[in-house]
Length: 407
Ligand SMILES: *Cc1c(COP(=O)(O)O)cnc(C)c1O
Image (cartoon, rainbow, N blue to C red; front, side, top):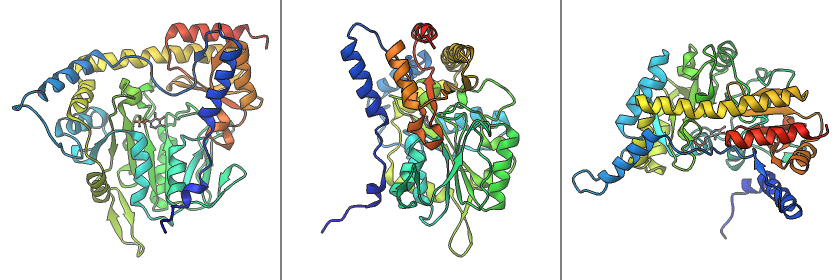
């Protein structure tokens, strides 16, 4: 008899985006003439930078001739891309990362989801609340949790991000083994200081723990004092794996390219307490189950680091950040307590009422779609997330409509 992995039955069905779609469809049916503005889903809306398109086309042409055609590439990524990332994203910032420590992939979602499989199933996992759902669900699938009870999976240590702690969770009181952190944060838009990040690194060293640091929104950081990478923190090379993506940085959500950094000195332990390097484990996993990112896509990603590419992604992220400022200013003026929007494309708004009630109000009275915070975890209740990913004109129109609601 073929048996299923029963851990999948523990997964709480995610109705969030289906529920949103249902309510939006009902509103549109009732108001066929009303134009809906979507500031909900975290997907970019603007075209790929010209530098990337040029490199992409050129690489496709190389595939058209036997002399320059490429078949299977290295699973870890082509050296040209790993080298430029190590230099531009790390070494120039004083972070000691080499090309062999960089693994090119088709997404930070896949990598943050897959990484847990190289660790034991009987470890204690700490996950933020509210959170990007991938971290939690993949640990449920792997059997690291009990059942879902009153908004929480048994066995998970939830790192509560609330207005009281400025959306930076306190260090766990008990010892945990695997810690997920994401800054600038999705969904709260909060950022972490070097000092705060150093506290987590120190905790991980002391507790022989490991930090999984998701920096998918690094390109939106505008304050120079904020860390761009966890490897700016002393000691992080031993205790942290970092995830990055070209998705939000350069509009690659449909093109697919990301990378994971596993330093050679990053360690984990076997049941006898003996130390092992993590890099060979991830390398083995990656090479066994992944075929590498296509050559043209890697060439397009490389172009992000060219002088033109750098200027174009700055313009691209600046465009969304201007939207974010507009949202932040308007919602603050309406008297709402907001986080994010300054170094992040998300604005997290305390609605002081039920998340779905706030969602329905924005939809019905302004025709604007946001994301109810409750969909990201228990601590998201009472909040909504507004995303800056849309055209400036649409964001302007959305804000005018929201300001006209008789609050
Ligand atoms: C969008 C996003 C990613 C990027 O995922 P890709 O698979 O690279 O598109 C990673 N982490 C978070 C928190 C995100 O919001």
